[in-house]
Image 1: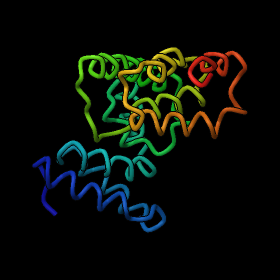
Image 2 (image 1 turned 60 degrees about the horizontal axis):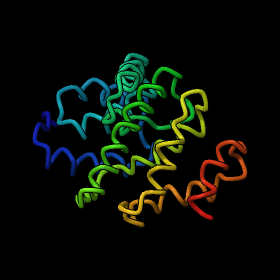
Image 3 (image 1 turned 180 degrees about the vertical axis):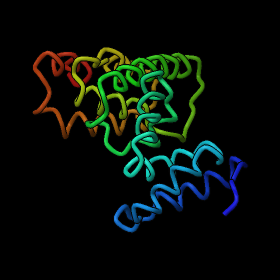
Image 4 (image 1 turned 120 degrees about the vertical axis):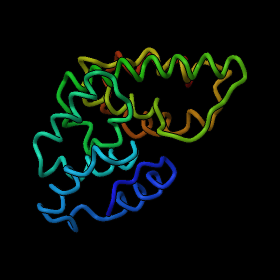
Length: 180
């Protein structure tokens, strides 16, 4: 297949690629996915890199490097946030923190964006697995802010409900006034 450079068809094809079960890909198909990824539109590139990174160490390294630089699009190429290097977790946590502050400011000005990845939920997952780079304060601020819509908070609240027993007392205490 020739490179797909348009954003709309790239996003559509990326959804198809993500639906293919991981065990369906042979090592050779994974290497081909990694090799073609740089030629495709961004979202399709991430989908192919996600597949290819399991067979190509250079692709995995590139994804982690981009993540360490705060490239949030790299999230789409990461299979397991618990397994990323600390530098990647730090870069993503910093970028997510900045994006969540912007999301709060947008809500306060009456602007509500929908769609895309759930940034607060993603930061909570990174915080959970990489406690040395955790940014819990911004998540507490996000939940405390009355301008933020409840549906924007839903996935984060669900994560906290499911993971609460595994969080430290210090982290849980940050959310007491949110629920109390």
